[in-house]
Amino acid sequence: MVVRVRGPQRIRVARIQDAGPCMTCGELIEFLMAYVDDELAPDRRAVFDAHLARCEACRRYLATYREAVVLGRDACADPGAPVANEVPEDLVQAILAVRSGVRS
Image (cartoon, rainbow, N blue to C red; front, top):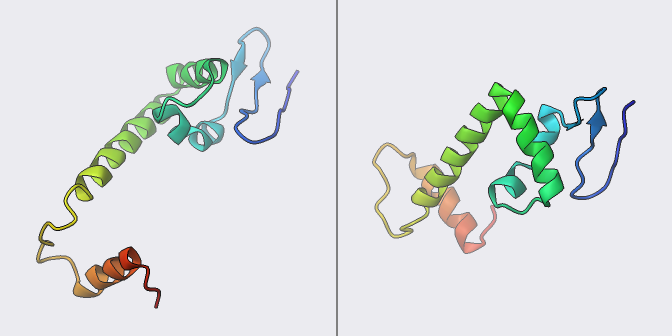
């Protein structure tokens, strides 16, 4: 029997025979930020962790997601840092315009 629950911050849970609650890879991705930020309710986190225990692809995706978060934070750590020479000037100007609230 499959049970679908819909709504904000709800994981659609399927019960496959006696395997217990599970989620799809797509559903895992929907809740990735909440998982990394430790904002999932304990029961939802358990379903998330159970999926990760069974899915190597999602474990790799989670690792790259965490790495991207770290790289993003590092890139924004010092807004006054000089820009590398290989960054195109039009890209630099577009980023500065967005930061200052100017839209083209």
